[in-house]
Image (cartoon, rainbow, N blue to C red; front, side, top):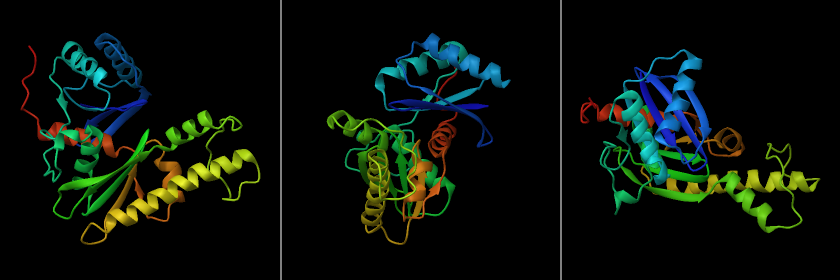
Length: 257
């Protein structure tokens, strides 16, 4: 078993892989854990699922304060040195002025796209931020775009507009809101879908050939169906990319004694 950990700004996903197949996954809230706290969470999850401890760990982290928890948990509980996703470990060609600027989740998505099917590809990750990552026909990462996430944009709207109360962002049945709540749902969700379509159109113009469109992230299931762009939604794309990076670096880290 191999453990892949995707630490996002608000949620953290953990996945157990065997032979590149995701056997079990969990989502927990991102916190500034201690190594012992994260180890206890993993132990509980594995015990309840009757799953054995993983022998390898790889992770992507966009919250630097949590790196020590994954590193410490991996060494202390599992006795392994984890592989962190980075420009140096991703194993793909990066045509970008400063590869160190790239978020680990974006690199993981690009890696997953290169091994999951036809290229070129555009990956839309609908999370706290909505990111678009572009991989050309040769398999090189060439750039992308970053936009406010659906929930982030909605939260800022509710914070700034005194007369708008927070509402559940369920998919609207019509773009024509007949109540304030439905008008908010229409504007936020159809607006996000329209923005995604426009960015896909612009980014596709930078590629030779029609790109494969992949959608992932917590909001993908709600936004992708509202888009005109024909996204293929793969909820666990990022975890798969993290696991692939771990495989590509297998043996490069020595196991702790």
